Amino acid sequence: MQDARFLPKDVWQFLFYPFYFVQEQTLVAEVKFKETRFAIAYLLIVILLGVIIYQYTSRRSPEQKNNLVHVPILGFLLPFYCSAYLIWLKGFSIYRYLMVLELITPALIILIIAYLYPHKRTVFIISIAIFALIAATVKPLDWWRMGWSDNYFGIDSQALKPYENSTIVMWGDEGTGYLVPHFPASTRFVRLRGNMGVSEGTLMRKNAEKFIAETTVGNLYILMTDFNSKSPELGKDLAKENLEIDFQNCQPFPSKIEKYNLCRLQKK
Image (cartoon, rainbow, N blue to C red; front, side, top):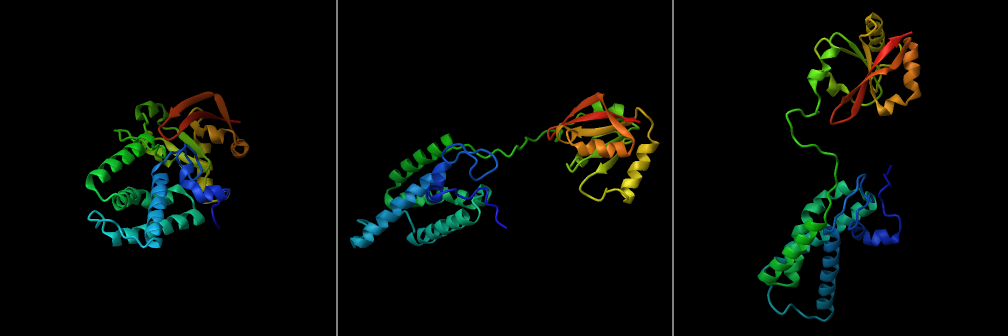
């Protein structure tokens, strides 16, 4: 199966996709970004091919020997670059798969400029101007990375002290296990629904039901997100255990990953 979400939508995108990246868009990624280096490389490659074709058809050789470019290197890199791009364009068009060419592009730009204008000063000035333009216009993909800090998840463990000797119910497929070490050692966690072996009748589910039944009123909570709080399945699963959520007793529980609520559970 092929993920066709990011493939070119028409012939114009197929022919000129790099120029669409110059503006902020989500054509080839899930998040917005803006990238000019591929459009610049595209233009330089077209100019280079035009020069080579002209030299070949007119049987003219360069006026002077090029001491800046080892032509066989350019002769290998250019076909590799173009063929790799075409494979990406036809098969994927997912930007993160293009990272290798993204790294190669600056070197290719310099090589093409040096081939067209074999003078060190000229190459230096043009390269600086092009890379300054790229640096000024680029907007990298933001994958919501966070800076390093003493507390990676931004969780205040001291604020969780009131949950000592409590049982907290987890529900849903979201990964929430990273929260557990921040709670007091006496806090017990059970899961009524997840993506690993907690369906009804399993030993894990039976143990969860046993621990919930043994927990006294006032010490039983559910960990909720805005997403799973709207699921009708949540209420059904809790009703099977004779539980309901006391929405008047919910405590916000923020982290750098997600905003949670710890809501008290009442037994019917």
